[in-house]
Image (cartoon, rainbow, N blue to C red; front, top):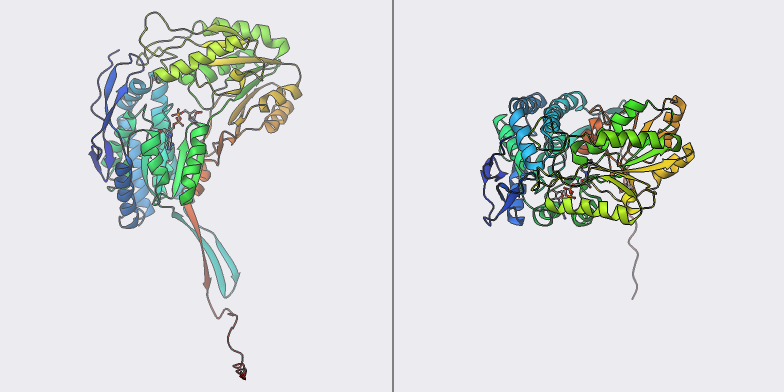
Amino acid sequence: MEHRQAERTLHFIDGRFCEGVAGRNFINLNPFTNQPINEVAEGSKEDIDLAVAAARRAFDEGPWRRMSVKDRLAMILRIAEGIEANAEEIAYLESLDTGLPISQTRKQTARAAENFRFFAEMVAARLHGEAFPVDRSFLNYTIHKPVGVAGLITPWNAPVMLETWKVAPCLATGNTCVLKPAEWSPLTASKLAEIIQEAGVPAGVFNIVHGFGETAGAALVAHPDVQLISFTGETTTGMEIMRNGSATLKRFSMELGGKSPVIVFADADFERALDAVIFGIYSFNGERCTANSRLLIEESLHDRFVAALEERIARIRVGDPLDPATEVGPLIHREHWKRVNAYIELAKEEGAVVTGGGCPEEFPDGNFIRPVLLTGVRNEMRVAQEEIFGPVLAVIPFQTEAEAIRLANDVKYGLAAYVWTSDLKRAHTVAQAIESGMVWINSQNVRDLRAPFGGTKYSGIGREGGHYSFEFYTEVQTVHVALGEHPIPKFGHSPQPKQATVSH
Ligand code: NAD
């Protein structure tokens, strides 16, 4: 597969691709070769100031939030068409940039288009308020208004899918925004800017500042003209963002890390559960927030399931992310690769048995780790408690349903969970007992865009998706209107009190 160089990646501010004020750049590396793909403009506080000012002008003075909803949503639909027309290029850039297999980035690109289509239709149906007739002389009603300038901060693990998941509802509801993509995956965001521009979206409505979290990201969070922050990334980053944004009292949505359990009972459909567990941890190179990184398996099934896992994992195709046959590609960058390998070493120190791992001989330069299975794991080990964010599955046996629930909940995270059983009552009982934002029963991560997405505990605050996104990206205003002679309490109508005489 040909790994081409990409053009320089620039900021997109006020309808123009531009260099940063300070003229600094950073090198974007290919995870497959660790060679440079291109140079990327490195954003500073000054670039954020320009981008927020452009977004503010577009919000305050531009046509975006004033135009008819029909015209605005027509543009949102044109963005979906633009993504579809450029789908192969977007999937290529995404795989080049992130190391995600192209068979998976093609699906994510389709989802990116679907995000715009879905939110255009959802906002068309939902953009209305409520009326509260009080009596014949008084009416209260609500309207949903855009919030203002949104700061959208995204991670590298599914860039175009997560960026569009935020940009689509944000713009459809009439906001303007500044997107700060992850420094490790800038390519598809800039392609999205081209498509948004071609769709006719006015200058300043959508802006991008590339660069690092500690500088560009932090300046966006602290900016007083930014009303809301939608953040997806690590839990510790989310905490810092909340601290830094508190001085300007922002609205936050926090989609954070996970350590999600998949519980497989002995009565589960063996083959379907096996496929789901494998896909759920090793797809997206294991760099997936909802990855089922802890397999809680009923003891009577343990040996048979583990044997089947080992046999199948050895056959997973690890290789060039641009090869359509590849199932697992290289991890995003060298530091992350070292971190995941350190967890594999830690697993050994903690007493787990490690199967798999290592780099395939034919790709010595890439950030590869072959799928890893950890058996003999106890839930209190660090490898069972901390988010590894790589192709590493920890297997923990249980004996009773109550124990499975206890183990599932015994982590600080609460993003997703998966339950496999043929007992309907147990499926629902266990699902409801698990502390997580989402539970899949006998299924793997398929969801309708109307359903809320998000986590509990250290996995996040708030929900996005469907009308939850609508609520997040709009401000509700209540209007109280007198239709007739509504009585008004009278102050200051009593006779003037006598002045007290002051004697000296
Ligand atoms: P990260 O927190 O390191 O970075 C995410 C983004 O935040 C990047 O754009 C980064 O530049 C920016 N950032 C970093 N420090 C910042 C600061 N001080 N102020 C403002 N912005 C800052 O996360 P990552 O390594 O890119 O992504 C992996 C993490 O994301 C994992 O923990 C994963 O579970 C999580 N994630 C969660 C979801 C979800 O929906 N819950 C989805 C995908 C990924």
